[in-house]
Amino acid sequence: MALKDYSELNPIQLDVLREIGNIGTGNAATSLASMLAKPVNIQVPKISILDFDTVTANLGGPENMIVGLLFALQGDVTGMMMFLLQKDFSHMVLNTLLGQSLHSFHEIDEMGISALQEIGNIMAAAYVNAIAQLTGMVIDISVPDICIDMCGAMLSVPAIHFANIGDKIIFIEDQFESDELSAVSQILLIPEVDALNQIMLRLGIEI
Image (cartoon, rainbow, N blue to C red):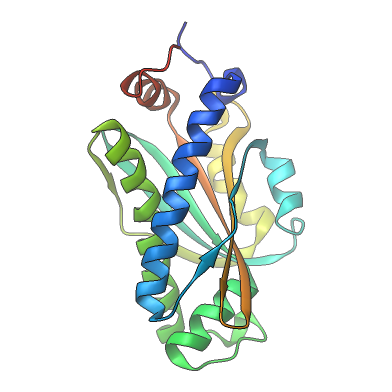
């Protein structure tokens, strides 16, 4: 029976999503290391199916300032992906690429925005490519919209857009370490339910 929303995912289907997340995280670490021109180590990613309120709490509460990059998924898989950068991750990137220390998001200039946008684009593509490689599906991502705002306002966009399929999303939390720096980033992966069903079918998972 086809899935109607994310809450219907069974343990086997969740394990499949975790494996996709593991592969995507490995791809992302490789891409990040290449762009930063230094080794990047990763911890095992935490992958959960959470409601938006819980995601907001995990991101530090509705008033916590974060960088968000929003991508539309197109092709065989439609939906949305949001790449979220906390201040420590943004500092790691900007310090390495531009020699800038980041004490406040208000300090980020146009060059810094461009650098974060490029990092987000590369890492989001790493997750999309993981799905495409495993399923043989063709998936494109849009040019990202970037925003620096409070977490509550940031998450209202996908919450409203996907209200018709429930309040749960795929939440991936990664911890990267490079030199003396350690940083966390989060991915919200929100394929349309029809696309999620197709992913499962392509992987031979019963729905």
